[in-house]
Image (cartoon, rainbow, N blue to C red):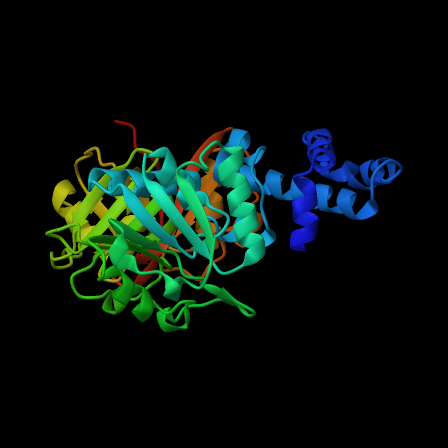
Length: 391
């Protein structure tokens, strides 16, 4: 999309087209486009249809109410922070007393919006003129332009020392897809760390798979999951955290800190199996959860915990195990058939078996359900059968 096409969407004619397209179904686009081109320029109709499609995609991240009023680019939808995660980060900044923040590599404005709604004044900086125009329109559409100043510039031109805090969200995608080397980010992680150290507080968004050895000295590394899916990792500076690692689980906001305990001991599978949240695993905090639950690992290299006693935990999902058996397709099919199991939830960790392929081979039938966990126990491939545990 060219910036001229985007600006045309902000005119009265463009707004009228977007309003008409608000509830259209994807399969109706050709017929809708043909009808609209009778009264409007073809280029404007194409831009409006593309924007309507992006708004539909953005609902998952921004919610229906905001997505219907905002503007997006394809990369902007893909790379924007999910609202729940952005709001969590904004609350952390606000709790630190931050009132003025530089949002570097701000994109279409997802983080700036959450920060502004938390009462923080934001300078949002991006080098793409189109992205800046979109972000500026978003701030205005949501009534936040009084708190968000948009600037089209290279982030290296901004002096971080003039702000209470800095947030940097480097580009982690290139022409060939995801970038895994932090020094290949744009800007590189080393530059972002240098900018962070010039401000009282800072947060740097990085890939969840960042190696722990790449975390800078003195930084608090936080992994955030939403609804069980790990969404991002953030390096925090200036928080005074006593523990180096944090796992935060949204939407509840439970946070577990630690990172200094040794790995728990392995042992046999007992009555209950606990599957730690992905953020806990990424943050290397399985040992902290094991200590809370008085649990052991089922294998030194597998992040499943086991215990005889059911205890509540916000950081792991519990299953009551009925069978612990060496993996065997025939035996599994026979057991499920014998128990009338028609609904099978297949989970795996440390197994090369693909769940969907296994499900096709099982051909489950019946009214009962079962959770099948494919994993390793003491180095051997095993299958654990059970159900989600009930308190």
